[in-house]
Length: 265
Image 1: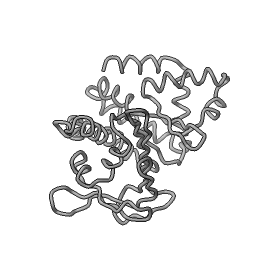
Image 2: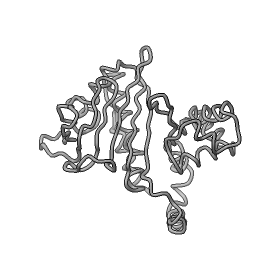
Image 3: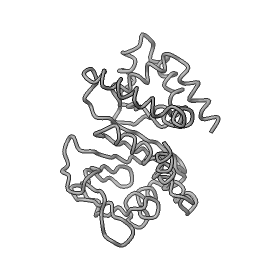
């Protein structure tokens, strides 16, 4: 934990790296060329700064064809805020933040936020794909079973595991390419798929005996949605990783820890 924090502080100490993060905050998912266009620096220098940010887990990258897109990862900064600020100054800072947001509202972009999370798992791509699409496995590590025939155009449901058959969320399967790529709309059961729909992409990339699993959630409607997925996806993926690598989920559901932290705020 201390080493992770050291890398975050080191990365944030440099003004150029802070400018890169500001650029991604304003427009997420940028290429190296676009990021270089914001700075009077060579591609090699910008790449070195991006490597430091990625090592600190402050950014994530996703391949899109021949391009590599860079995304801001808010989780480490959120952890800093939870550790040092939230217990002491949260109510006052929330009030000040509300005032600031209201003042800046006319200048803010209307683009909906994107969240990207990356984890590495000791498993085969086929096993990770099974974990994403099998009703029993999703029920074991997610607390809900994901149910569908997983064909493009089909609907999918996020059903409770209490036997009630109630689905709390769902959507439409937009793309399914086993065992590497799954794209779903994620929201209300009856919501239609469209360009503005909340959409999740699971990208499974093999490397020798491990896989890199990237979760990209686009078209998040509100700040509350961003906060929810920033806590939710890391918790779910941690449980998935534990199940595949050890045969057991974590001893406590990780999202319950987030709920307890929120309750104390």
